[in-house]
Length: 329
Image 1 (cartoon, rainbow, N blue to C red):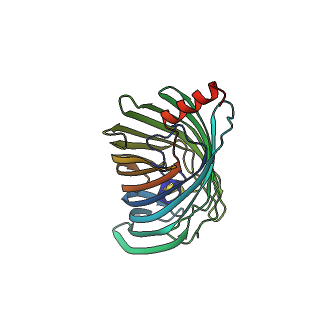
Image 2: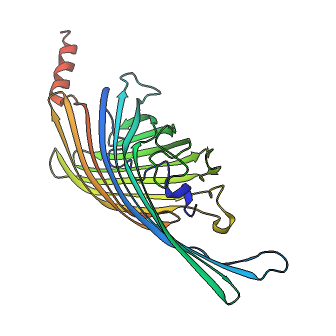
């Protein structure tokens, strides 16, 4: 494998968290649907003019490898989740699970040039693979605390490798191994000035892929979102992420080791929050352009998210309820 995170695919999808990451939730059931599209490419000299001596009497063999990969995927995520009314350690507890389905396509083209003395030979080829199916299951649990305009969250999640995966395929929707991820989040939200800022950071530990004997390194990720409300229902802003591998993968060939993945992303967002009856509807559009990709394909990705949750009580209804309670009615 020429890319870190076993083919350049990590458990954590950069951009999964954004604005309002740690905001308070209403107790009860909620549902989120996401359309995610990504288009990435990568290439370069993965091993430049490495000399290998074959036997005591053999001349030096110069080997040059060059590979280019292009991949795209369109996935649908669904996240049913539930927020408990009873506080846990003084915070709101939320549990849910992410499931995915869609299509992934990968094309790999490359050349290898070998030279012995004055003689050289070059071989080129291309492989294309398309996969339809389901992704892995991702359970997630979080605790949230609120103090005025400041909101805090801790979360834990992981990967249950039940999705469509084959170690002989270039394109996969499952990652072929388990993972555990945890982190913290902070949201500043001031309704008086209509401003919001959120940042979420965490680390991922990956288990061994028993189909390949490969183990991804420990990954660190940071997602952020910034928004300004232009009305009570609409806002615009920016989003971004940093993804960096802290430890190298295990199981890659010595000729390309060590491999660490890294990528940065930033882009615009726009959103709408509209209570309809007893349901609060949240619609968000965001897009990321990537750069500084290292041992990982980079490009762009887009997100369209729709969330349905219980609508919050209005200040009027809360005040009325408090007045009735004081009067014993």
